Image (cartoon, rainbow, N blue to C red; front, side, top):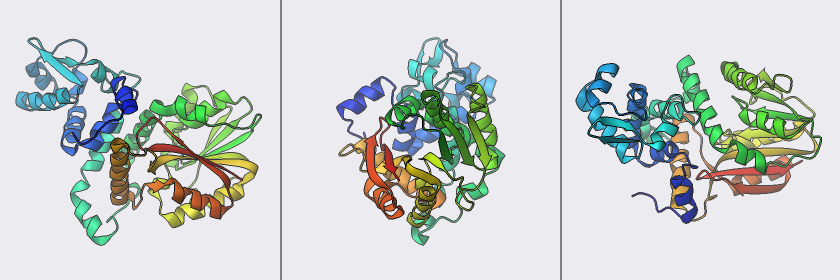
Amino acid sequence: MIYKFNFIEKMLLNKDIIAHPFTDIGSNVGLAKALGVAVKLKITDQLSSEEKSSAQIAKQCSVSEKGVELLLDCLEAMGYTERNSKGWKFTKRGLKFLDKNSPDSFRYFILYCDWLFNSIISLEDTIVHGKPSKINYDVFGEHEWELYSRAMIEISRTNLKEVAGKIKLPPNTPKLIDLGGSHGQYSIELCKRNNNLSATILDFETVRKYADECIQMHSMQSRVQFEATDFMKEDLPQGNDAALLFNIIHGLTPEQNQSLFEKIFSSLNKGGQLIILDQIKGVGGNSQLSKATTSFMALNLFHQANGNAYSFYEVRAWANDAGFSNQQLRKLHAPGFGLISCEK
């Protein structure tokens, strides 16, 4: 076993509060690939709480029966499937994370990671040359943008309430910007909790449809808007009271982050907050799971986007240099993730 889980991690994993696909994919590339192929070939779509034979599954998916057996053996080892004399079925965990109709499904996250792993063969070149041969956003087509966007929606569901509960905005805060917010789930939740708050999501036009889906689902059209922009190149709206920077800094270089922090600082009113959510090196203390998660993410981000996972001390330095004060770090349940806030 790669990890030694501490008591809290064991409890959260046993209760499926930490999403198992997230930890499974990062801990064993072979099993992660098996999981990705099972979802991609729609083998998991044939499973439910009722048993089905390998032959039936293979016929429905137009694949070999032996291949089905071997893949489902892997999924059984990860706790997603089980079998008896009648055939295969989902476990409780499989129904939660792999059933296409489950509100907690992680299917798009798994498919997106499967796409990422297809490029891992060139990792050696990235290490040798000190930079990736291409940035993944530059080669994204419509399919890749959908995998990425829906994967981010699935991830946000796992910590939406926890994150929103840790963000304390002053009463009557009116205006928030969500940089790279994509789906807008966090902005929507914060607007629900703060009656006078309105939010503007700043992201590429290619992800507008996913934000629109989430905004309409929560009937928040009057308070959450989407503005297509490249916030790294274009000016930010001014007079904001808070700014969200969630899962963004890991895809940027230190120099880019410093420049972005300064731009955000200029866009905020006095007393405004910058709130950052990301994988933060060292946030888990001695937890092997947190260390492995941030280390693997850092390597993958370097390979895919010339990015990195940064420590609180690095983020605090950017904030200080930009003019922010009162930097605070809060640990989240998800291994390796932290929430950092600072004020203008």
